[in-house]
Image (cartoon, rainbow, N blue to C red; front, side):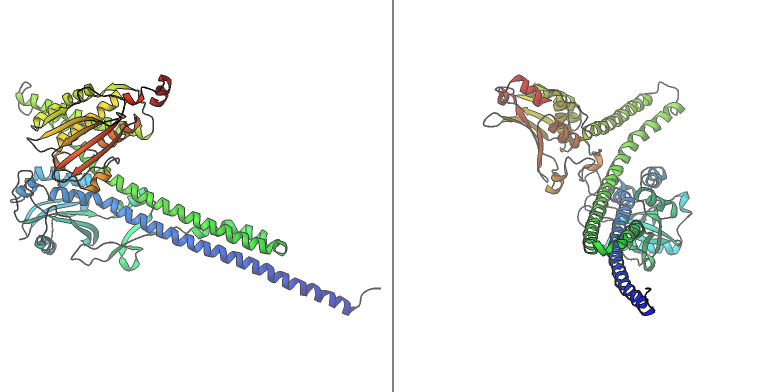
Length: 552
């Protein structure tokens, strides 16, 4: 018998009553999972934005630091102070600040301005589109110069820097009072009267480097109200600029990848609703933590890389340009025979300068290549028993020329019996040469460098000590020694510039043949380099085969 209308209606009601809770459960499951994903996506977006902001700040530091450092170097230069007392020679000024700074640190405008408004030097890059300063601009720069000169300072002057507007364009302005320390032949304790001014254009061409080097999409300098991060104002100016770029949205990828999975989960939610909800919550929490950790690590690596690259480029650019300029300049004089036919005594002098510059450049390249091999763990060491006395004497002979030029005496106090140590002889010799060269380089004229060897009580360790009586270093700089591309900043640094690789190479070579290197230093007292080596006496009881394995 067929069911009646009431029975059919009752069955439909039962199905409807069952369908509604099931649909509600499925909908609730879908909504909860979607909400969890949305929350995770929001956190990912926030972490991505924070990482981009930190990368943008690192990018600004990286692009402006060469101009700030160079401005401080030249403003604290005795020769600059003496020359600024009158209008600067254009050829000399272009060679050290004008066109040189344009190529080195992207400086579009260089100027030397006194507190009375007397413009002693002005260089305007063709790309700047400027031909001169207006009276209003000159008055404003004079006012800023007076403010900088009025601030008392002791020792090295730190630049004032920040963003400003010049003819409606955003620029990065750096200004430092020109001072004389008296260490390089200039006057002592003479009051500054002028400032060194640099402008760096932050135009679209310049900002394109942010996209290329830091993956910031379409960066623009805009009013701070519309910006993602604010740019620092130059002291005394209220520019109120900021940096804006197109932000990446991580949530779109997260949701796009997860929605198909959510649909599949909704179809089986009746059986696995509890397990699915708990599992997804756990998975998304782990994913969020992993993404946040990865973003933080990438940001810190970018900041460290930006600082290291900035310092390396700043040091290397000057080191490579100086010998190359000498080679090119003197070669042109020889080619054009400016002093007459070949045979003039000047040509011999220039040829010597070319040779010295070429050797200096070759030494820099060799240091870079060696550091690269050491960093890649591809340098091979041949370790064996070495008489340390002969190595030290050979190194002293090679460094004696530089010591004689500076009138620095090298004293070697060896033990009665020359210690025999385990090392790679060539690598040990290079380390000793680097230590002696540094000691001579940073010693005052008419001083001495003391070299001595010591043995530990049990004769297991032999120490080679190289002590100078030079300028010394503070503790924070001693801790940084040995880091690649790092060079301590000091009053003597202008006449002793380098790549900062010498000590890095020495640390790596010493570690490679089983030694260790450390420094003890005090400012105005001197520095002692201590090279600790394995004594051969302590290894006599070890079988030869075992010694060979350890040396390898």
